[in-house]
Length: 246
Image (tube, rainbow, N blue to C red; front, side, top):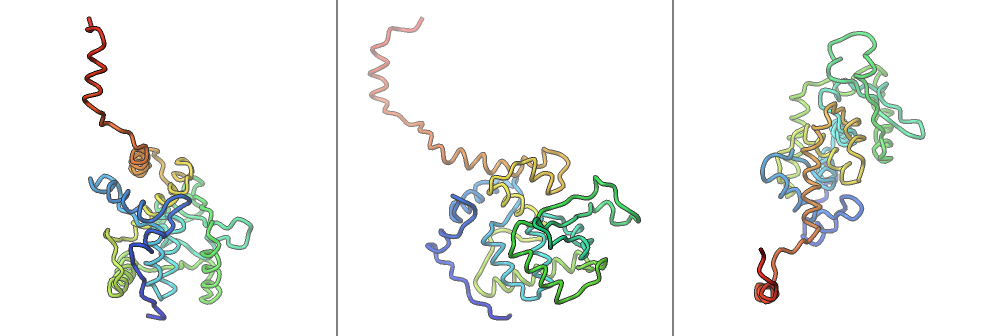
């Protein structure tokens, strides 16, 4: 491992890790525990956890694959079809062109409804991708990650093992699809509209977003601080003064 610095996981430092404006890590972690306790909400990582996991991927090919999943929310099968031609990194608004998994076995130009554009809003990621492509010089139509899904999963398992050996543990099982759930939750934390996230993630059915937005229903309920306990003696005295109800 190149220059790995052990991460200090003191409660004080953890509580300061940012998730989104006005949301700290400790609060988001508590909310996740509550939301996932029934098993109805997909398991997801929070932004600092993803950053830590990527930190334990010294191989740039591995690192850029999972950074791409995190920055786009794409499925692992969609990532396997990415080529340098899929990316537009030079413009004012960088983006990636994602083909639906349905077109994997087809030839010719895919239908418009099976291609979606996802903006790349993190300038650090864009620069990393540019640098990696300049260094590796892949052919424009050559898949960037021409490996099996199982190989990708093994890359991820290696990173998790490195993290655990360094004292960094994740409270949920981590798979490549976890990055998709994490992307959607991260966008929701940043108050992006549900319909926008649905389009970017390639969900056709609006109901598919409901499992994620349940978390924020819990968040709202937890912050309302609605009281239910009153003084029984005072209540009885007040009611005693009222005429009997007919």
